[in-house]
Image (cartoon, rainbow, N blue to C red; front, side, top):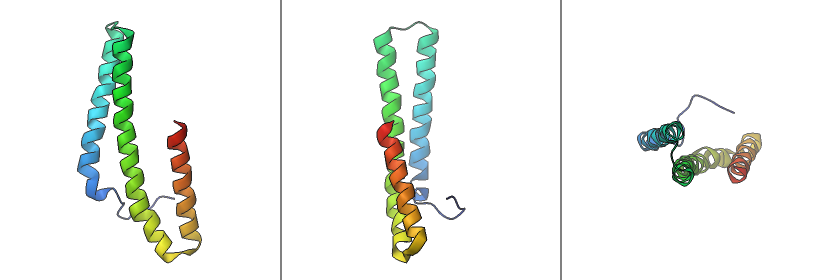
Length: 98
């Protein structure tokens, strides 16, 4: 369910965008390393760093979602609360599997 209200991450938007730009740069660096035939272990190290950067963004978004969207829905109860809990559970499952 998506809507156009204020999201939990809004207060952290600048920091999230900064982290995403950093991860984007790391991914471009990995591509450059492959293009330049860099050593496999060095490339894997950079892939790990980019993965960690994206995981950090994902965890921050999840934390904000739970603290804002899910908590707000839980206050109201009913089917919307259940939907938000189901949605959050599915997001956590996707993160754990990735």
